[in-house]
Length: 103
Image (cartoon, rainbow, N blue to C red; front, side, top):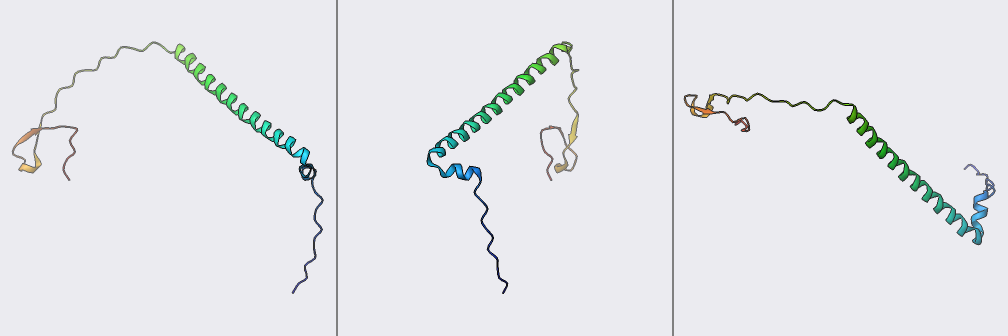
């Protein structure tokens, strides 16, 4: 078996030494909470600015467009009768485009 050499433990970091003190623990927690609050508020403000910018840009683009034109669509003639495939093709029935043909 190979002998394992015990590695010395690294010295505690500055944060670990600070958190070991009971009086500093509360201050660190308060600082972390305030930083998180500032981060969330910043994200909210940036989101509001993005929405404001998009709405403003949409209005500016809409103002630069020509007014909508009046369009009149031609009247379509009804389609002719189609033979019914189930009755042998002799009779004809009007075609309904909403109907799905039988499979």
